[in-house]
Picture 1 (cartoon, rainbow, N blue to C red):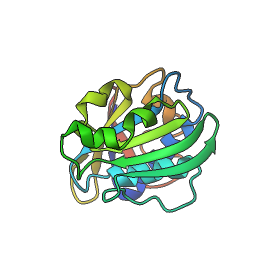
Picture 2 (picture 1 turned 90 degrees about the horizontal axis):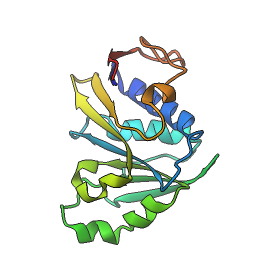
Picture 3 (picture 1 turned 60 degrees about the vertical axis):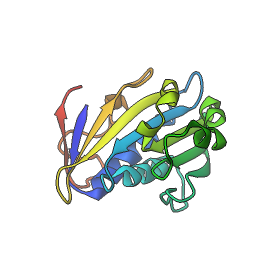
Picture 4 (picture 1 turned 135 degrees about the horizontal axis):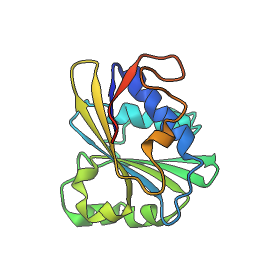
Length: 179
């Protein structure tokens, strides 16, 4: 499924909708891990901030670019922790990833994990439940492509929104294909 957003606010709102809906999904084995890909400035962090708000996180969610991993406690159904991970500054060396404790984070079914620059850690793809790619169309518009999920669909997570605009009455967005 692809969605074209027309503002950062809408990208945030779509993330928020997914964050509030996903809490009802059980990650049967291991954490619920969403990988984000896309160029700098394409909306990955804004989208993640929306997910965090949808999960009920009240604190400011900042990009973890310089500290790599940020942890937020949550108490939304089956999740107890939200991890926001940004791999932009890391090389492709496996030891750096092992030092972050990713295997432990990904193995805990009470964790909800969003990883920016997921394409840098090919060896962890078996933990991935969903892959979201962000592309810049222009200064305001982004194309967000949702791929591969385990036991649910992106359409289900966005069920209370309709093509042409989020249920919250924010800026419009459109589904560009039915994948």
